[in-house]
Image (tube, rainbow, N blue to C red; front, side, top):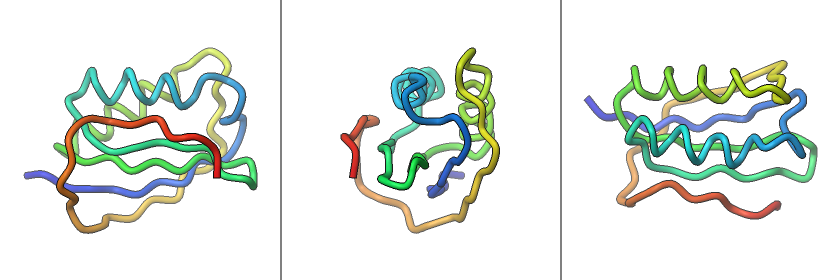
Length: 91
């Protein structure tokens, strides 16, 4: 089963390598989507793939030395036609 989830991460998530750790974790677990910094200091991410792989990816990101996730908002959203995982600039 394939799902797509939208996330907003808060905490020490900007300026600590979060987006690039997310990129390499998404590749490692075969996920598609994107990650970007938001102007309020949070990080937005969408992941599409196997639900277990998504959970493993989030755990892998949270294991980063300088990353400290205080909160995660998530919701399931409709699937998207895409390939790969993108690191987007700030909004």
